Length: 365
Image (cartoon, rainbow, N blue to C red; front, side, top):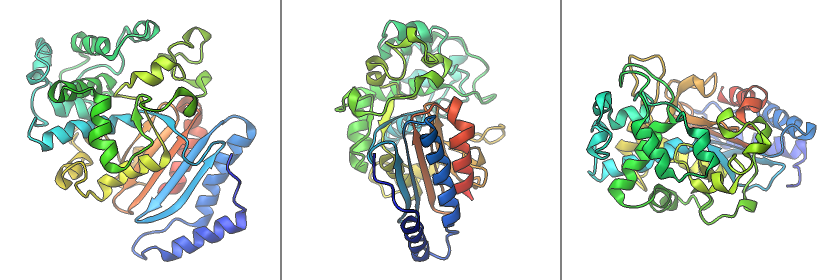
């Protein structure tokens, strides 16, 4: 465990950083940063939270970077923060002229062509408006027998739609899975290898992988699975060989929620959209991904990204990011040039109201 920084030295450092920031940016107060730290530390000291990492940046300034109960470069299962990473891989192919976001999915997955599936576009997959379900009805059965991703793809291709494509919003991990399948069919590479070579490596995200990549199970932070979501076993002893901590799930590399990363690497990813430099996507494409594509619908979404105050109560409508069911949250706000990444080992069912939302709400304003 890292040596705690004395409170006086910590606050003095924060004050010095704040003074160095541009006066055009509404800098975070040391009181808010200290309060956020106390929220996390109290949960660790009580034993309810085993590990966490928080990183906050404003412009080029690292305002706060701290780990709790783990090393500073600890690797967490980031769950659905994976989704915008997968979407980035797909949009890279758009930059290369391999596809357009309003192409029908069946153009690339020919068997996805029955009934209303013919009307589902890539944009629908990335904005959760396709009508596909979040998880398959046979999700638990597939995990229990350690099914490969290809079997999840087959299930997503044939599963019944919940509504007419484009008519409403409904969160759908299976839509992101089919977006990843398009990447695989065009690139003739696995989605894990494609993201490693074309997204993570160019951005310098050295401790990020879809699945375990080159990392070993013992090198990543375990999840406190007793608070896991029902589709992930809810901590049942019967789910030990397929839950979030299993070799199977950690290695599967589910493109909707199976990436591993650090707070620093996720920050790097977010800020490549705040200040796109063309290392992966064309700047215009990066900006397109963080715009709201669900106009006319109740829930704003970017391409793979969540949007606005759903991520933090004082964020602007331009803010973008994502949360994860393993107890993670990442957002960036172009209005303040501020980004926040909070990774924890305590699933969101237990940490959302006690850690994730309080810290995000504090530091979003």
